[in-house]
Length: 238
Image 1: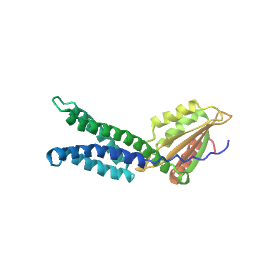
Image 2: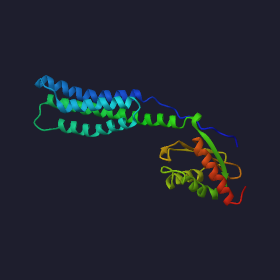
Image 3: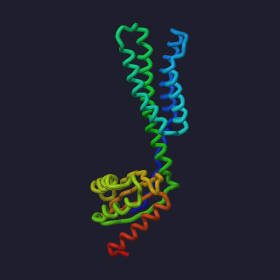
Image 4: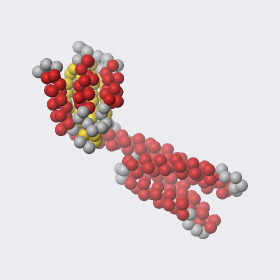
């Protein structure tokens, strides 16, 4: 069976979607601020605070902070609801309704772009985590009856992030894996309180044995190889 190397994930650009999303949210509150100034010659405090918060979170998000993107995205939900409620209040002139309605539309559009930005940021992060040059391989071939016991032994290496649910996912792929087929799973478990890349490549050979390849950090790959040797000894295989 030919050896395969992990393929680097595509790294979509998130900055365009981030810039569009943050700009639309800011535009919504700029609309409210300008309208309030034209009517009262004063500053609309609440819209100004929200615009400042959107600007701050957007700045952090553009610097690659995924948490800032998600916070701004989640804030768009109550801001949109509040805008729609304000636009549907009774006894309002139609011009007065246009400002919160426009703010709601701009906020919803901004949230749409921010969602795409959050997805793109995750893919960019995974692309960096699973960069081929940073990964090292541990490989083994087992009879199908030994897949689950060995994976359970591997799971004990991790603090969290690779346990029974991940093992179930892998075994599910193995069950439907045909001869000559290859599939892969990506995980980011915690190893000694640090998040590490773990790519597991699965392939079925002509004898129905499962070829499992682990691509991860050098230290963890060595630990997996050690677990393999120990497990083979318990099976009486040298």
